[in-house]
Length: 136
Image (tube, rainbow, N blue to C red; front, side):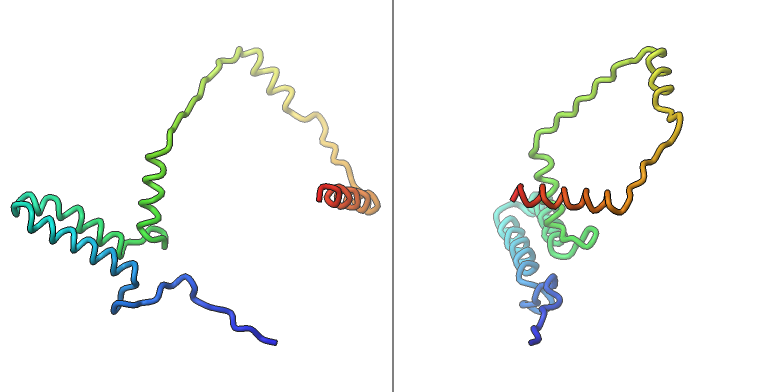
């Protein structure tokens, strides 16, 4: 029995001409907000407010960062700004004698690597399987 596997599931359907539904909403929403601002405020103030809104609308519609939509980047930025950030680092100065002792102790005198035979490997694998079954 054969099943058909869906392909291209990450590509949005184009509903309004070359735009997907989401892209159309971003463009229509930005254009609607710009139009309302244009009608309410004087021209000079309206242009100052409309430019960032139009730029955001166009960025949400077309701009991608590392093949990700701009809305994902914007959402991550807002989440980052909203979180509390506390970075604590206290450097404790060490005496020179302690540094020398640590350096001397970290140098291996001889490198012994234990070898596992096949039977020991089987025993370890079996014991891990038994412990895993007991946890379930």
